[in-house]
Image: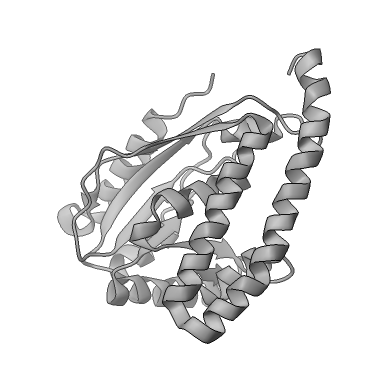
Length: 248
């Protein structure tokens, strides 16, 4: 980031952080009310608009989101959205732009507590919270998650790198989580998703945030989960995602 942009980035980062946390605190009680008074549908509607606000809030930093989805999704089936992972800001656009498919995330269990709005949604919105230090718990949670999306025709979102790439270069994909989801949701389709440039938001750390970026999400052609042996399915999915990553 050049000197002038960096100077501008300081006040914009302040405004962004104020907006971000204000949104989280406002939507937390709204989620509670929606979930307890209106059930799943009402809660989901609130979560949709929470993520709309978080997505559009990036405009404060001069960040544009381009979500490319030219695919036709089959109806009445669950989806497993598989994506590379570069930044926490990857999540709200996936929620918002794919909201009609009811995306639910595989997340580490630590995020299920202490974060306004986000933790509440992870606990009550249908996502899977896994304990990486407890393989038995993680396997059980993933298996139940697979059964859940199969039963309700919803979407699981999984980042097989396991953690964020801090420089845009994808890490090795782990097959374990995806393998369990495919097994427990046999009618599902894999939806590869590539994210580009979101890592640059934190290129200089959390302060100041990088401004003036264009982040691109690209949805690739869905693949029927049982159309290939799992090893071939996994390699094909990984290749499709990684071939569309630009490291410039």
